Image (cartoon, rainbow, N blue to C red; front, side, top):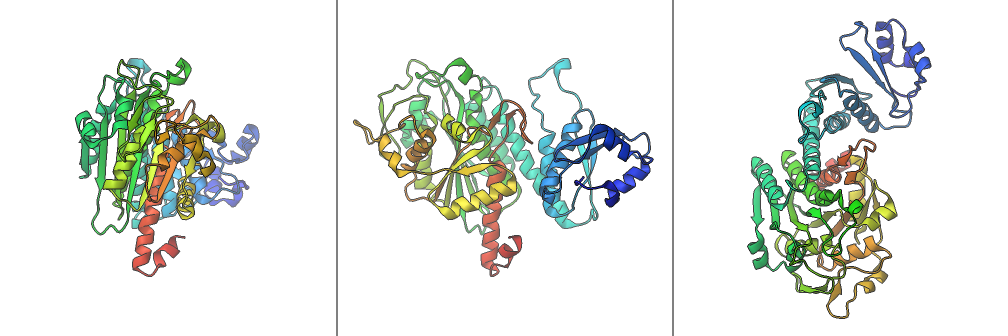
Length: 485
């Protein structure tokens, strides 16, 4: 409900009448004044069909979409003991119905695959109804379908990140990627270690050298007919990062199963694009390996030749993600030749130092690309902040023995990591997302759960939808793009 007297709201007024005029007293007794995300759960007492009624405050300044997300998320959260819920939305439109669907499905997410017996969580929302004015409206039905496509892709990414590393390794990630992509008829290419060696991805292989489990190079292609634009996403898929010989301390290692969150998001977004049948060609590339300490592990001081021919001196074996991404990016540049190239990676702790745990860093030299992606993030309700690609810091990557070092000084670590990746993108229109903070939560935050969050999927989808809309606008003189704006 909005921050106003309920007697001015037709739905609340009707509810108050059905309950016998008790809402004013309840509001007063519980101190409920409809602040954003404030809730009041009251018994229906047989006066209406529901057993319980949840009132959700949305404030007076929230947009209709934001208000809808609050209502839907709180409904899912409060329904841990109920299997079904019916929602009255603050406003009904395709945008709010899609937002409600996404928030409900994501809010009901629980990771319980490894819980057994009485320890396995019971209940949980399994059915939800949106009370809208016209259930026959095709636009609203499509909004529900689209919302489910995005939310299910986000939840899949969460599952992958939450999976324990003894089960979720490069081989199983490749198998799941193949299975999920083939369900949608997508082309899947998966390379084993010998094929990666044959391709010349020596940086990728260096990271894998200390692991007993083979690496996997995963390429999924969604190629709809008449697509006029092509986007390639490259994701870091480190299923466990011990730090290599530059071993992480135990407290820093415990959650390193989350180091494949960029790869999980990359898989989720290409599946979502296919489910939405977007008229944009989308390629998803995931470089997946462990970074371990076996006898053959790579060392500080080693030099390797990358796929694009540049020699790289290893400085810190715990800065492994950029090495895997470098070879994957070089391959994408040469073989995919996309109009837009995007990297998702839990790349640096330095980005978390700069931006905190709940905002990702965004790097690109292209102002229009940055603006388009930032607008998509705002619509998707994911937080990014554009960071500088300061060329003055590039000299810290100069090596005495090789073409480039893979880490710079301790200052500006997230920036120098991005500058290293830039060495492998050629002239591509490239954007890098350092999602180290928001990809994994130590505790629930906002609408994101504890553990894997699926961060990045929703924004990528919105960006692809923006490109699709722009394509339609070009065909009809720009009217569609203008209407969406």
